[in-house]
Length: 257
Image 1: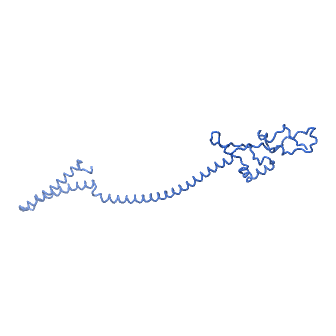
Image 2: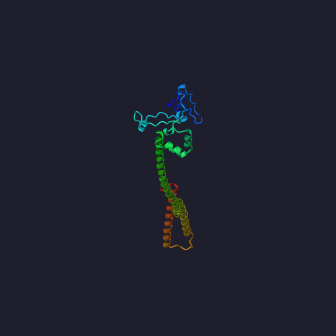
Image 3: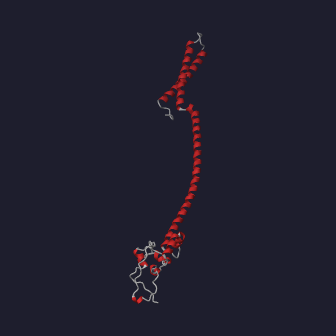
């Protein structure tokens, strides 16, 4: 029996894919009526013989030749597009293809198998795996940094609390020191000097009044000599204190003004 050759007027499966008009729900055009010389043909060709006609095999090239350009520069493998179909599925019926599409595990195995996947799929998977490994390394490094940061944060918090406690202690010590040194402050010393000048002046006046008033008896030479000595000492101390106060008022005391 002579083999039936489809007419060139019928578009092939490859032509449907190239024109982007392939629709699994629309049946193909019926074959033409046989000619007189084909009357002896007893049966019509199966639909899958011209509908699922396999496309011509692609020339096999090494993967490296697709990834490396003429200048030796690596190039990305182009995306085959939505009309690409693995060779193992080119002779499958529409029902088989629908079953594969409805089974996610089978579809994933078909798309990622080494024998059925497009060369661009492993390349994209490799770049994705590299990005995932880098992300995992960065996450691990981030966890280490987080642990060290937590330790440093706890140590810094403890040192900060200790610094606050020492600051409170220092303020208390400073208050005690100021209270202990307050009698020796410039203002206190100046007040004491002024009070000393007034007090010594009153002592001199009291000595003068006691000598002038007396009790009416004649003083001996010894008593006069003793009074004169005491009065000179008192006046000497009075003049000394007054001189110091005047120098302070004039700003001639170093270290305080």
